[in-house]
Every structure is written in structure tokens, then in C-alpha cells.
Length: 361
Image 1 (cartoon, rainbow, N blue to C red):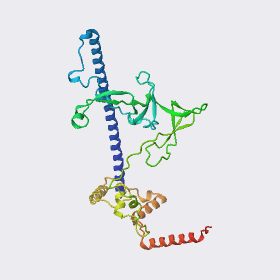
Image 2 (cartoon, one colour):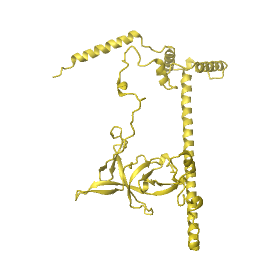
Image 3 (cartoon, rainbow, N blue to C red):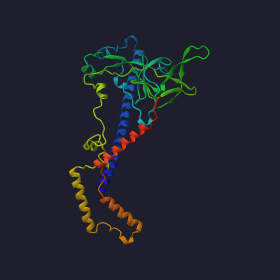
Image 4 (cartoon, rainbow, N blue to C red):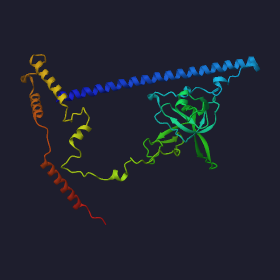
């Protein structure tokens, strides 16, 4: 059986190597996908800039004779950007922020001076953790042309142009918190430049979607509460199991019977566990054939001879004899009489504890 255990350990190491290989391939594929998305977005942006510059030059030189561009194919989509530019780039998992202290419902301010919405305050609609972006209600709006496949598959969505809010990077927004002015006592809006995390495993209300940590203003020791977030849909359906059925006790434990059939325990254990006592017939036959071949090669002299008894020290001889006795000894088993005796001892101990316990008032 030692060879069986060794084979199981080798299989575990091989599985870990395969898993690590797949993880490296997935990271590389995600990296190249981000590069392709970035190239496509840059190409689309450059094409739009070139077309705008060309149109500006024509309008400048031709004046009233400049052609109209909101006709023909561009009649309904002129001035709208392509939907491919809405695709966000994912941040590599190793570089992502572990704790994002901005959630839907927070009020934030735009800090990019070159942006047309610089200094405006809005409410966060959504946060994309993989891309580390936030979507703010009513800000960074842009007209986007609806792709043809959406017009063909969704009969309800027939608008050629849709106005949507484009996401901001987390580095372009700052949280707005309401703090009480120490002089006037009136709550005022304060821009929080930096926050830190506390109580990383704080308890939250049942069903709440708030994060499991708390956020504090760095340097002021002031906690910023999370906004009231809508709980997830907890509708009930006919197929749901009732709570009364879940809490009903349908099995009483006993010392004479295991909590589950032995076959179930074997299925729940790891397939490579050394505690397994059931193997497939094909695997056992393969191991027996392998052991027979090993003994045959050993008899022919392909393996090194075991050290002679005369070359071993008394301590080594005792250890070898003890190992052989343990290998030949059958595994210990609990009999019915032993289990009954254990039950009697448990009952007597419980009765003794109950008799020695001091009576209450």
C-alpha cells in the first residue's frame, strides 16, 4: 500500500503543476486580450479625431458650400461614438486594489481638470471591481450608436443612438462625506482625499450588500458609514424549501451507528487520501502487476541488495522488526462491545455531572 500512497502523492503534485500551468496561460491570455482591446479603442479614437479634423477643415475653407454630414447612412447616428469604445480594460489581478471604499449610492466629485465635468458631484450607480471604474449618474454622458446585432435580436430596443454614462477610473473621483462643522454645527460636504480600512471582518446586517469592512478618514479617526444599499432580491418560489422543513430533526445520533453510511464517507473523502479503504478493481490489479514486476526484477539483481543484518546496528534491527510487525498487524476496529462500553461510560459521566451540579435558586 505504500506504493499506492506514493502514486497518490505523485498524482496530487502533477495536478498542482497542471493547475499552475493553466493559471499562467489564463493570465497571459487576459493580458493579450487587454492589449487587443486597448489597440482597438485607440484606433477608433484616432479615426474619430481624423474625421473631425477633416470636417473642420472643410467647413473652414468651404464656408456655406460645406457639405452636410447628417444625411444618408449617418442621418440618425451622426456624432455618436462606436459601442466598442465602451469596453473596459480589466486590471491584472495582482495589481487590483484589495479594498474599494466607494460603493453604489456614494456621492463623488470629479477631479480631472481637463474633463468637461470637472468639479461636478454625482451619485455612484455602479462599481466595476475588475476594471476599477465607477459609473456616476448624469456625468460623462455620451451618445453611442446601437450595434446592428442588438437591433436584430432585441425588438424592444430599436433606438439607433443611446445616451449612456461612461465609467470613470477610481483615480479620477474622490468621495464626498457629510461632516458636522465644529463651529456652526451644520453638516457640510467634505472631500475625502484618502481613506483607510478597519475591521476587515466586521458584521453587517442580514441580507445587506454592504462590504464586510469599515472605512475611516485617514488622520482624523472619523468613520464614514456605508450608504443604504438595496438588498438582493429574496423572492420566494414554490420550489424553495421551507424553514420549518430545514429545522426539523430527522435523525438522532447514536454511539452504535455512524452518522452516515461508510460508502458516503468514502465518497466525501479526497480520492487521493491515505485513509481510503476502497479502491477500484482495475487500479488494484494494476498495482499488483506492478509489484510483481518489481519483485521479479529484484530477484534478477536489477535492484540493490538490502543491507545484511550483520551491518545494521541493534537500534536499526529493532526498528526494522517493529515496522514489519506493524505492517503485518491488521488495522484496529471498534467492536459492538467496545462501543457499548463507551456509551455506558458516557452516560455514567453525565449522571455524575448532573448530581454534583449545585441546584439553582
